[in-house]
Image (cartoon, rainbow, N blue to C red; front, side, top):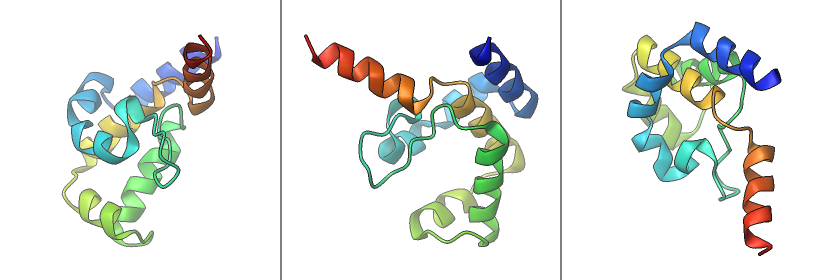
Length: 107
């Protein structure tokens, strides 16, 4: 039920499939599906769409500072940001992803 609510909320922000298509650049740092295994890059998977959208807008405007993200967000349109937020919000949460990785590595 919680997952369905998260997907519904994500869909109200933007187009999940369009966000997936736009996420290739993001994956270089944030990992496939936003499930980063590098502590230097935050996990995006399962974050609230509103939070992700707000963060992208803040990077674009310069209200939030990070040299890489400011440059990446500068090229994004409002629609791009909404679609990316929807896509990452619809993915398994970071905890679910880590639990699955741990279970798979245990044998």
